[in-house]
Length: 306
Image (cartoon, rainbow, N blue to C red; front, side, top):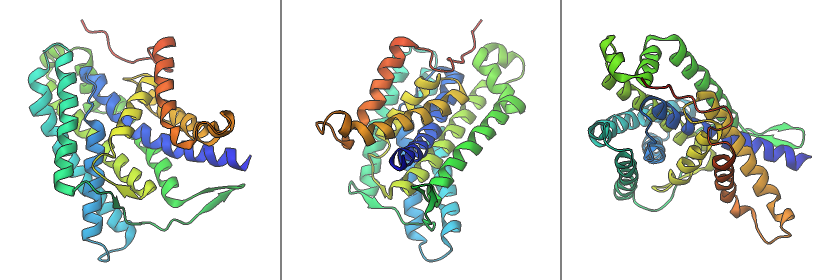
């Protein structure tokens, strides 16, 4: 039972990171029906930016303050990056066939990886320990300060986004643009501004996820965004892409499935497969969901366009 509880905790933490990234996917998809496959690389840029600030200012301030400063720097850089990506790569293709922006997104992903490799070099870098990793015992399982912070950040983010979308003027503009951008424009909404704001919000979520991911695993490199981005997309589809609560449910569920699978796959296969095969579970889930329930667990929430 101690091992099972530990795997559940690990799954909740991993799933919370996936959920943060999946929320960015689902925000953009809900507005313009675009899967931004460069979103994982925005996470990577956020983590590397945070690492640069944290290493550069090491010893000048307390760890918690350095974390806040490095996170703010990552948010600013990622927001500017995602704003530029939307304006340069996606906006000119907004009325093009769906395949065109999809290919552009993949190209942007490779471009960001290459630029990050040039700027930060290809070797993995240890991420500094900014918080005291004080362990807390739950039965026979262990959870530390960073993991608690990840769980809290995901819960607060979901609550904040739900309030933003359902209770604020910007949220109403987002919902109007998602339903019909032309009619929304006639009602005084500026669709271009709303879409840019959505990309900036998505970048903020990616930066937060990148910093949390780097703190949890203790290392950063130019390829670190690929797998979390791909799994977060799986989580968004699993929960129901376009649905904020579905993104979190899908991310957490996928994290728990992956954690339990990696913990017990060796016993179940008689040692043929080990924990390093954990990535197969995300894609098994994706295949099953697309086959049996393409709309996801909570259903795809996309407005019918007139």
